[in-house]
Amino acid sequence: MALAAAGRVLLQAGSRLGRREVVDGARRFANKRVEVEADEAAGIAVMKLKNPPVNSLSLEFLTEFLISLEKLENNKNFRGVILTSERPGVFSAGLDLMEMYGRNPAHYAEYWRAVQELWLRLYLSNMILVCAINGTSPAGGCLMALTCDHRIMADNPKYTIGLNESQLGIVAPFWFKDNFVNTVGYRTAEHALQLGLLFPPAEALKLGIVDEVVPEDQVHSKAQSVMAQWMAIPDHSRQLTKNMMRKAMADNLIKQREADIQNFVSFISRDSIQKSLHTYLEKLKQKKG
Ligand SMILES: CCCCCCCCCC/C=C/CC(=O)SCCNC(=O)CCNC(=O)[C@H](O)C(C)(C)COP(=O)(O)OP(=O)(O)OC[C@H]1O[C@@H](n2cnc3c(N)ncnc32)[C@H](O)[C@@H]1OP(=O)(O)O
Image (cartoon, rainbow, N blue to C red; front, side):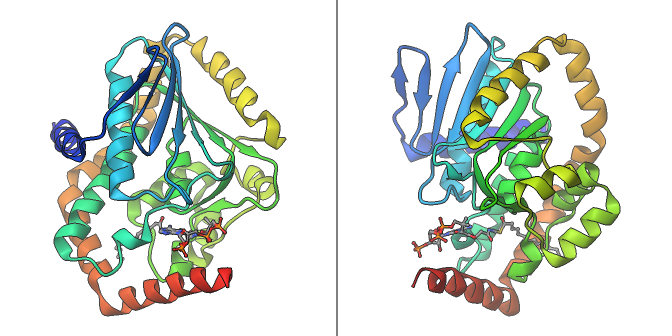
């Protein structure tokens, strides 16, 4: 119920944005920040993140992404989604720092609800989610990948993935942490989260953050072949199994969703946290100069 209500709010927000859908022969639809190549006959869609320059998860991006995902969820012909970046090199730079810096509490609350919604929708999706990680994927970008059923990363040592929040002076919330612990195990998570480590593909593979590392030009073909394997499993048994594995963790967030929003708002509003974000943003700018 809570999920459905939040979804409606996002859909309303989406229509307020007034984006015109572009339909190309019923096989492709796009809003400004997400491109969907939908092969209805095959039951597979490729969702490309397209929020330049670095696919940060801004409120507008989250809204558009959730609307696109809901369209696919509502069409029973779609059984699988491949998530990838339209801009190879960066899968996603994670949460948009500008949504968490210098805004007011109401904005922080609205933003955090949308971040929660993204995680819940992806984590509990009945569809098969395969992540084709064709670039760097820190923090919220890594979290998106962690919600998927299978992760394939491009073998480029320049790319990294992980939860680096502590390096920014912020803390990965409990549900980021739980998702990570369930993927890599407690000790690895404890170590990596405290240090805010980002891992190149080979290390990410060793730790189980990703399931496969393949040459960069094969990420998409690999994602398609993995998808074909998963599609061969009957939906009902796969979905019931997925739900059995994931429901408890998602319920844990659902039951304390409002408290989690309040925690986020009071944490992110602190002067000391705003100062840390300011310093980090300055560092990102200086890197350029
Ligand atoms: C106990 C209490 C518990 C309370 C719970 C509270 C919990 C709070 C937790 C909040 C969780 C946050 C999770 C996150 O996702 S935080 C975001 C983490 N992301 C990063 O650290 C990535 C930062 N970016 C980079 O490292 C690089 O940009 C890149 C992704 C490696 C790409 O490098 P590239 O050289 O291609 O590009 P630039 O660095 O030049 O960036 C281009 C412009 O984009 C801006 N940028 C980059 N990342 C972000 C971002 N995440 N949000 C907003 N904007 C971003 C960058 O500043 C450049 O802008 P400019 O052109 O205007 O200078």
